[in-house]
Length: 413
Image 1 (spheres, rainbow, N blue to C red):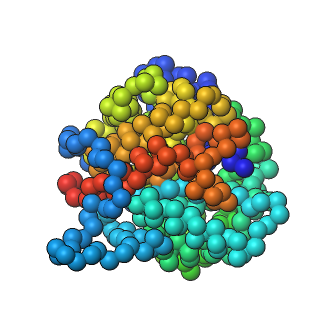
Image 2: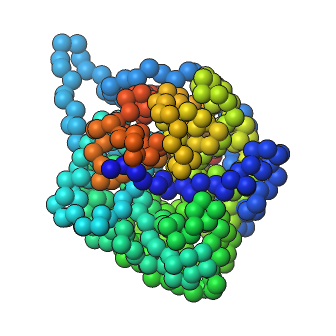
């Protein structure tokens, strides 16, 4: 069954109304960068003009050519044809993994990881991010712990090893479960622990085995926090990030929510910033892709004009339903299914990634236990599910296999 909550908490309705209905100033959650931190640098200037979205192709644009009369070697469907290297775009998908009430066997987990890796490779992806939940007792709690739905560090390692062996760039992303936070008004972005020092100590203890797994599996990025608006800028992050950097060889990153990102600077002492990107665009369902691109650029221009070569879209997605453009992260509502809305959104976001010279995009999402080769059950599934929706899959494949050299190709960063 696919009735899952996406990682992004729905931005509280009252705040969202203010964001959309009034000129954007600093937002309800002010944001700042720490002076002296290793932070993404925004490059000013006009973004280079990009051609229209290329047609869907079955092979990457950079595939090698072969002499006339000789057959190209058959591609291995279980291996990335061109593994990611520094400077290349990250074309990826966010997997969300909750342990089932009756734990699957390790053999099942390994087989499922192979199935998901093969699906990604068929889309032309070169990256995979594994998100999983951890628990807290409530918005004022100082304690963070593994819950019933939290996979163990050892089982997470099984999946990361399979992804890495397939040639995929890997990211590990522990994320606070919101079940005890009374969503949608309560979400991970407005928690207020009674003792922040106790909260950070508890968080470090919880993260430690997962940092070890990330190190052992040569995971490329470890996301130390996701959408924790109310805690951004706390001095507790500096010792936690320092601990993480010593515990793993992975890049240590933080994924900000879209509202805080466009509102100002993110005060986090990490080496990389991702953005969970659900920018609302006030256009009808019949709007062309160009209108969606313009809507995204209007939001991004509030942050900076021109290229954003140090930013990754850690999450991007939208429900395949009527009216989704105005609230792309809305997973509480299930209106009439509209695959075209989702496919056009994906196409537009991919164009923005290229135009703004971003590091890449991770589509939200695929539920780890699902079969990605079957259509979603729209009676129960989240409208944000895209695997098994042919129009969206075509948009993803076209995005991942069309020409784009990467963020550094034409920028001065």
